[in-house]
Image (cartoon, rainbow, N blue to C red; front, side, top):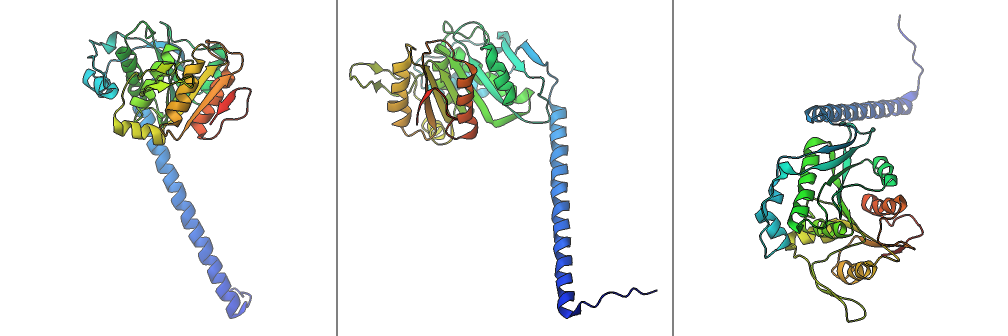
Amino acid sequence: MSMNWPNFGKVGQQSLTRLGRTFRDAAHRLIKKWVVISLLLVEAAAQAADLPSFTVGKSTVSFTVLPQQAEPDEVKWRLHSVENPGAFDLAKENFQLIVPFSYNHTNPWGVFIWISPGDTASIPADWEPVLAGRKLLFVGALKSGNPRNIFDRVRLAVAANTAMRARFNVDGRRVYVSGHSGGGRVASMVGVAYADMFSGTIPFMGVNFYENITAGDGKTTYGANFIPDDEVLAIAKKFCRYALVTGEKDFNRAGTKTVFEQGYKKEGFTSVTYFEVPGQGHGLPSAKWLEQGLDFLDAGKVPKPGNAKQLQ
């Protein structure tokens, strides 16, 4: 039995033909899209299967493989140091690790590498949920405080970077270094001298720079602390992001502001901002200022309005 199709006429038939081709092409595109998605999911699952198991929550870990970037000659070259870095055995060092319960190997997370001014690697309790909410793993070396020599502190941060990439599914675009006081100073050096490894830096209450900088009073000079390689420096200026945080009552406030204005800005860093927390002394501020700093590093936009004084 033959079907009696409606008579659409020549124009109608052409329209139906075009419509059929449109549906066919759309179906093909949809199939290709799902094939790509399926392949990506398979690749992600395979990558997750290759990563080692991990402990959720806080734990103390050690890393054994010293990366080439942390070898003595490399560190000396990165900082253009006259001194030679001393002996260093990474296997004897310990790190505090915080892996939120929401982490799994399937989805990539960022890394927040902490340089402490003291022997512990602790951060304020209200910072931890902020890092978890932003999908940032925390790692900080123990006994990496101000009494430790600068070379070791740099090497510990660099070793943490490569070790975390080997153990977790890390988003390389979101590997940040941070620290407080003297640790902030070291973080600011690492963030520039290793700009090819760290995409963002948040130094709290302390910052160093690679040029001698004279304050506005013409009397105070903040001396250069390192000299980065020209090619790495070009990466830092063009691609990396820096959020300098200080307090209104912080004794490092003047230096931080001067380095921001006469250092980073004057030297042509494209993505740098400055936060001055009202009433804050030298201690670490509440989590809201960490959030604003991370807003800047993550989104590459002006942070959300707050009570901190911010300069662009």
